[in-house]
Length: 268
Image 1 (cartoon, rainbow, N blue to C red):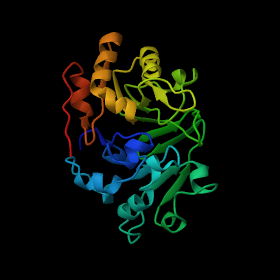
Image 2 (image 1 turned 90 degrees about the vertical axis):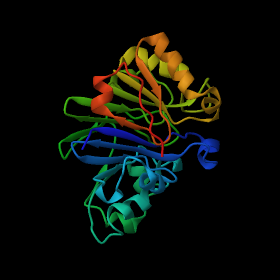
Image 3 (image 1 turned 120 degrees about the vertical axis):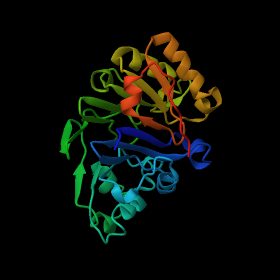
Image 4 (image 1 turned 90 degrees about the horizontal axis):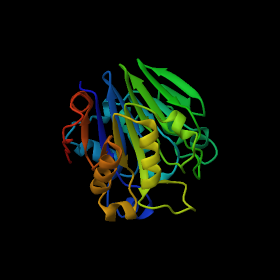
């Protein structure tokens, strides 16, 4: 199976998510024939089943929750049910914060019994999972306990910021061949613990990924046309920058080998 990232949704913020102006199904990553679903928000199951990538929830190996906000976790229980055939075939691993399981749980207790394992993510945690290294190097600045995710396999490193306010320390940790930036806003709104385009510019210029991907768009980004914002950043920084589309399939072998080619956007 090809190495690939499938964007089952690119929505961020309440209006975009709950009006489904953009989808909010999270991100599906396949490496070494291992399938990971990151942040299955509202509609994750439907988006997976309708994807042109032929995604089969029963073949998921793990679900990763960066935090419990609903735009990142609303479909976690239904995805666990789908992954385990309603619990008749217990399997899979859940990576989640302690708060998502204990303080204000979003993962129902009965579905936890369907899983093979539950791993608690925290600052500095590293897991070896079926030949893939998964780490949560630093706690983000966000309204809930939140961590970005670093995934490494076959000399490929994917860094996903999840939701956070910009902080200098993140420049040391969110480095990879591919950098996925949750870029909610076009310009800064100081009371929100989210990245804006200027934050993305700083992070990309300092971490220098081979490919930077903007996603998790609020209304200011949707109205600004994210693909135009990404093109402007690319021209300014000299780094390949694209804006994710709902349903976009990124084949990592071809995209990384042909990094100067225009990415092919496949929709649902």
